[in-house]
Length: 42
Image 1: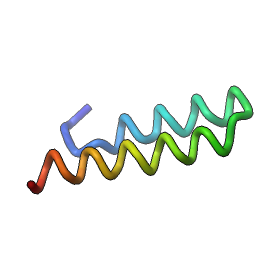
Image 2: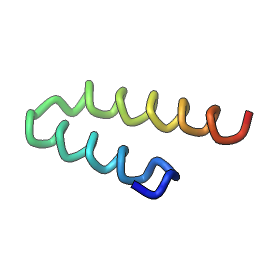
Image 3: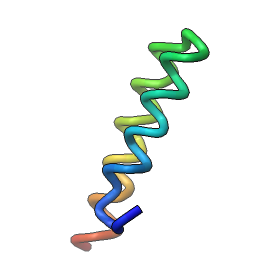
Image 4: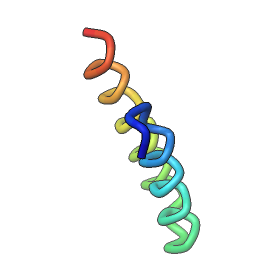
């Protein structure tokens, strides 16, 4: 959890795969990455 968002994204991906919710997981990853990008660079 070093602040660049990678750990959070990986956790989301693992959760999505485990639960079988690939579409929801992908949406979560995209939304999370976008939000982290905005928070980091705005």
